[in-house]
Length: 257
Image (cartoon, rainbow, N blue to C red; front, side):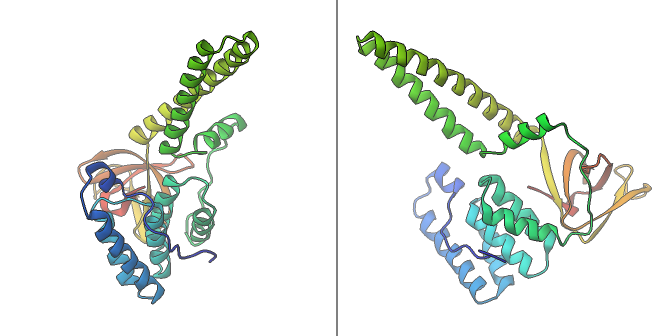
């Protein structure tokens, strides 16, 4: 599997960045490198344990999730491998290494669920939304905002009519792009808050018609399948498959991406 092990340090350490805990980066970086060393030595269970300590501490990072997915893949836990590849891809959309390994892992799942057909415009729209992560769209919107502020200031600074006309046109274009980017960011944020996807992590799961262990089985799903999480009742999660099938499964059988 090409580029199966990523040696780079944690790219995103969200908790440390937000809380400013002094010395935490060095400590977590040491743990990350220890996990990498276990991986190099093919001690995958120890690598998983070390990486998971970081995850449970609240740290996130493309390399952390990517390496954890690789370690799970090596131990044959395809559901968890896909889960962490998806988490890594969520932080770094378009990363070729992640996409490659995720595709290889998906070849090993049992369920081959065909998505409902989409009109090509909706496919184009979904591709546009996925072009950047939420942080990527935020940075892009901020750049357009700074360009708009700069162009507005320069418009009033220059006295040359030609320059003013050029800047005015550029400002209108920048404003349009800012509005589009802000709209895409808003939609992306709303989706992350309201729409959740998950990965089945148990080998075989009997999906129930209702949130009750005594309910009839609706269908069966297997480890690694990606589902949409629609509702929850106590220890049950309502899931929707890509082909539209609905049912309830125990909460511990699925993990949120």
